[in-house]
Image 1 (cartoon, helix red, strand yellow):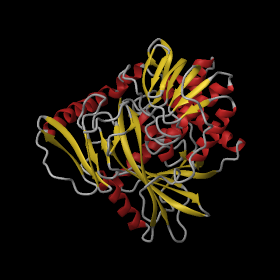
Image 2: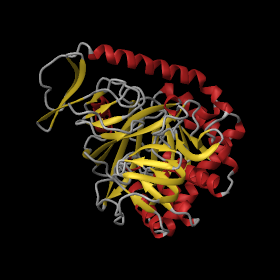
Image 3: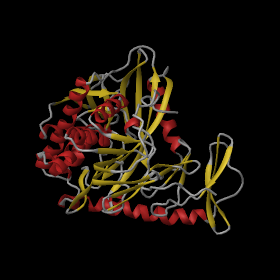
Image 4: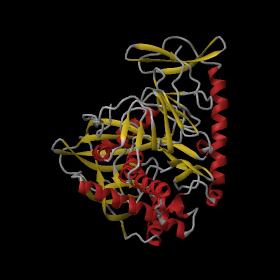
Length: 488
């Protein structure tokens, strides 16, 4: 199934010639970060090209829950545990500026938004301490939060923190508006154009080379290994679904502090309000059955909303930095030719806009005091060394066990919707059956050669090392890999 937001006529992009020529700025990725950045550069009179491997919004932005909130689950307390009060305040200021910029843009371009309170709640007694920590962190950072013992949810909660007058929207409406404005200011957008490498001022794509004075990587996780961001980020996949629910249901934006995460909001669609439920996340490629996570989310929804009727189901991927703060700035220290934005920890609607503002400021001579908190190379990363060590131990373990498992895979044709890695001679082979057709691909991730795992929820091959994903027949869905799998 497709996301509620992508179930529409695709965003219209002016017909463009084959990529080529030279630009002041080449932006890789046409999600929220990429299109905000492109618009800001184009408004400043710079020549801009946006290169998108798939279509506008196809990866993360078109698959989010579309919450534009300064209350972000328990994320602020997680940041507070690792950083100074000054840094936490800068993070809040960045998100506030991103939020207000986007709300102004929506108002100026007649893009619908809905105001709603954001609520982080404890679904169990164990979650109460987490919510109280978030409440204190928000207060200390200057957010006007309120504590309540109960909510309007149809089940008992164990305390909640509320931040009034936050916002939500359809993210594809926003991307459509950004695309229109960026193109009106002279930007050129190339869809279905996969970037493979950047050498000097040359950006190499599967449709030819482009030259750029500045390159912005707005690709979820950087597609260039320089800087080792793949070892400083953890990729997470989470799920969402839209339901038609008879009668009234709560219209605020909710997120549980407990695991598995439960996210709720409403979405106007086709003259009615749908209930959106999300969560049940896991590290990419490291769960035996992603479909079991989806089923758990369905069961939870139907327990609390018994007559809920499924209309759409989708999933999204995001990346968390080892010290909880995004990375926005030069890919490598001392060089501003290649810029990067990543590590939003599932809060990309505010952080993506803040990142675009910061990147434009760096390249065009502006200055945001809060941008210091997002530096790509910062001393505060020492607070995340234990997390980095743990993450990379897990990467090494999955690299080893993946190859060992490939040595013992069974034979036979997989049933519909199933996939596995088996061995043919000395070679591992990924075999799956989708829509009655059995495909065979190399299950070796072209990024750092991990063995891929089958995702039974999305019928894809997912890498447990750094989160690259491929279609059942080997087409690249998202990086850090930059090439398809070999078909066998």
